[in-house]
Amino acid sequence: MAAPIPASPNTASPLFLREPEIRRGVELLYFGYAHMTRAIDAGLAAQGLGRAHHRALYFIARKPELTVSALLALLAITKQSLGRVLGELAERGLVETRAGERDRRQRLLRLTPSGAALEAELFEALREKMSGAYSSAGQGAVGGFWAVLEGLVPEAERGRIADLGK
Image (cartoon, rainbow, N blue to C red; front, side, top):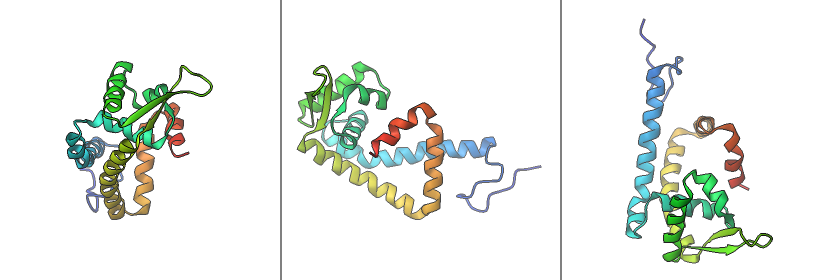
């Protein structure tokens, strides 16, 4: 017996845990992310930057005074990769570091005014994409989308994400 066909492409089948539904979710995640990030690729390229630079700018903007070690944990990349990204951002005058107040070995990160302006410009392009998608999906769907994405994040890491909004 064939699986029931959903009422619309945006309505999940009652058999949402079967392979076709899982594949549709994975594909939508891939393509949605690709189209969202394309919205900022030209702005990054104009600065000679890539997506790794954007992720660093984004999280430093969310948490000024973020430590290098905290950023390393958020991005889940190697120290070498992060060092290269932060070095390039500092050379371009987009990010500055300073020693911690209590622990002078700590390196605290902050966007410069130029870095904040670039991050705001890039975020505006992302905001347009996300708000358009949110608007067409509706409030209930947004909550469900968040729940699904949160479910993809290991529980041990969810606290770091929650802390970004504080």
